[in-house]
Length: 228
Image (cartoon, rainbow, N blue to C red):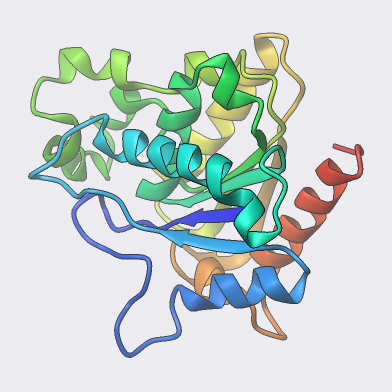
């Protein structure tokens, strides 16, 4: 079962965008590769602050653990995929999971998220953070997921896009570096060449240009067959 959590700068977005194929394209991609696809929503800022998004991913995970049999799925083979703000929420969820729930997560794919909130505050994308994380930057280190991700023991794939703001690339690279230096297995790290912050996701399911989908399929299949 592969669960997709959308982006939207913490303040907008939904699991289905009206009059577009998004994000049904993710479900199509999952079905085409014989996975069960789930697209999800979460509470949005500024009404809801950190850690609401991560808590909503956790609530969905708990529900899927109970309901997996209904859909013919294995509740110990759940993969979480997040894009942008969605990747941040997935990382928050993973960093706060208890051991009983963690054993149901087979792997996670983080595409262009924010994992060290404190270091992102002064960057070119720092302006989008206050609405969700609040105005007190001194609290941001506690809201960063990287330290906890280092000890998860869950296979991770971290992806960034060639043509997106530098901070997203730095966040992904630094997260991988910190996880590895903490003694954890090296996460899969992928740069999606030719893509910007949005295009890699919008190409998922297409016959051409779907670099993200190809890497997701390879990662999920390798984890399921014990080759991560």
